[in-house]
Structure formats: C-alpha cells, structure tokens
Length: 282
Length: 225
Image (spheres, each protein chain N blue to C red):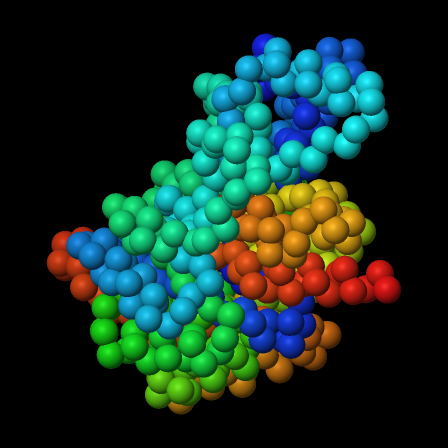
C-alpha cells in the first residue's frame, strides 16, 4: 500500500484503522507514512475507509487554521478526505501478505476467501472429519497481532514430528515444500500476515497430546494463537466425546460453529472429486 | 468463515448474536449455487436480520468510494440488504446476522424447508446453536469449538475492545479503532449506534453485529460511572 504524499493531509484517521498499527504521521514531512515491514497488505485502510476527493491544499489550510485557534476538528473517523491511499503492485514474496491478510482475495489453492479454509463448515458434504476424528484449526496472529511465517513453520514442524496430517485444501499446506516435515518455503519465512490457519486432522485419542504440544510451542512464538477444534456429532446431534477432553484441559467452551447438516452434494459427479489430507497418516 | 468462531465473550454475551451462514464447497455443491445463495439471503429478510453479508462483496453497510462532504452530518446508517442480495455474483460465503434467538431459530426452520443443498452453519454460543437445531428438528452434524486465545496474550487489549474488534474475525476492525469508538462514546462525541456503524463498515464480509456492538459500547460508557 502506498499513501500519496501529494494528497495526504495528515488527518490521522488512518492511523487508527490499521490493524497492525503500521501507519503513523511522520513529523519530518507531516504526512501519513506506512511502516512497510509491519504492514501486512490487508487493505483495511484502502477498502475500509470511505473516500472523499477534497482538494488537499484547501484541507491543509483549514486544518492549520483550526490548529492555530485550538479548535477541535471533529471529522468522521472512517474517512480519508483526499483519497490518498493507492494500492501498489506487489511482487513475490510480499504478495503472500495480501493473500493471507485481505479477506477479499481468494486463495488460489482453495478458491475460498479469508484464510481459505472450510474446516467442519462443509463437513456434511466433504466428510473430512469423521466420527472418532478431530480437526484442529491452529490460527496464528489472531486477533490483531499478526504473525511471521517462521512462527507458523515452527509449529508445523513440531506437529509434523507427531505424525499429524495437514489438510491438503489449505493455503498454508500449499506453501509447504515438505508437508511430511511441515517445512515452508524459505523465501516467505520473514513475511508477516494478519493471520493464517494451520489445519490438521487426527484421531480423538490424540487430542490432549496435540494440544499439549501446541501449548509447548506457542510459548516460543511472539504472537497469539486461536485454537479451534472440530468434530463430528453422533446421529442424535450430540457431542460427548471431545468436549469433555477439552474441559479436562481447562477450556471453558462458550462459542462454537455448528454445521447443521443441511448440505448435499449437488454437483455433477465429474466435479465432485474427493480431497484427501497430505502428510503422515497417523 | 472462521471469522465468526473466535468472537470474544462468554456464552451470555452472545445472547444477541446469531450468525447463520451458507457456504458452498468447491467440487461438491458449488455448481449453480449463486441463485441458491441469493435465495438464502432473500429468505433471511423475513426474519429481521441486523446484517447480511457476502464474503466477496461486503455487508449491508459499506464504505463509500466517493463520499460527499455534506454526509458528515447526514451519514446513512440504514443497512442496504438489497445491495447485498443483488451483488452476489460468484460462489462465496453468505451470512445473515440476527440479534434475537427466535429469529435465528425460525430462519433455520425455513432453511430446512427450502432445502437449498448448501452447507449451513450457525455460529453463536454452543447452547444457542443447539436450540436453533432443536427448534428446526435437525440433529447437529458437526461442531467446531472455539478454545479462545492463547500464547502471547499480553499483546491483546482489554475485554471491551476485544469484544468489539473480534466480531470481524478477519481482523479488519483494529483494536485502535474499537478503543477510539469506546472513547468517543464516553466523551459523548458519537452515539453507540453511530460508533457501531463506523466499525460495521470495515467488516468486509458483513458478519459484524451492530446491535451487539452498540450494546457493548453502552456498557463501556456505563462502566466509567
């Protein structure tokens, strides 16, 4: 992202809307400036701020006048008055920042927006997580902290050592050079994204061991982890297998996403190809 | 749509927050799904949603690319549901947000009858989703639990900020903006509804719940007494 200094009037609205806090008013030029190392190319500034197209010179003069008289200027907080944000062309590897951070960009590997995962949301048609299995979503950087790929790789390699299988239809998996080891491409390891999800599947009896491993590794990371655990309900819609394990581990279960099971495979058979996880099969 | 899973708060704080969404799975039920996605949204209108969303094109309250400066005093806070429905043009995730459990329950019942074939999920408290399924006579198929946030949690802001910002799980509502809106409501510079509408516009898939946000802002204002 680029802020056009010829347009910016240093109103400061954008400094609040940046999820990474990467925008600041540079006092040497009195213009909003982006810390490109911290910017994750999420486009919250460009897509989220409404745009006016006021004359920058006029707005700067007004702002100076208000400042002289110590008058409080009370503009709308979600507006860029001069439409100063201009997307720039992103090259590899920086382009992965946007792919994982801007929810409107579908991941090429999955075609799904956001972080590109389906998890148990489509389990009624994919059968991805079966009875007796558990699907983990290990999400890094959420909420509002961000994560670098080396941190994701560290967790992925630790989990791979335990023999878990990584979901094939997942954007992180698509960036692995060696899914059996959880190894990511070297050229993206220092890139920062708003958040990213590692998806794994295992058997119910390994739930506790997986969570203990995640807890162990997350202590060595400089970010937060949001953990989701998906499983199949029984024929009565009950789930009394995984929840007790999670509660035993000290989790208070408040919120869940519930697949109500109304989905059906409606595509023609040629399009309804199955997708299996990759990596070790344990 | 994991973006609705990790909303911060206890079960009680979700009493006015029910997200029902439809998602086609690539290669399974995405063929010819656009009219079904529109039908999902059109059906939701009968049950008084507080927001509708299309993950590709946005929610019912959107930022403007060409805002007239006079709008600073006349900002429209009315959700444009028709724009969401008419805008669906590709296989995507669509969502309807309700602030009353009974409305969500009735919607799930109607979805069962409509038999769209799309994957339907309810994101709220565990009990709330169970009640929606029971009301419709549907046994839950699968459940995805949120275990909350762990790791370097000292990097996270306070509870009220988290409750506001995590309603967009994609992270489009920054902690700084949520904190600023709490401050502005406390200062009397904006109403809770106005502040909620600013944040809603940043949610690019339309799952932000402006009713819950306004309630949290009112509670935050009250907490200073």
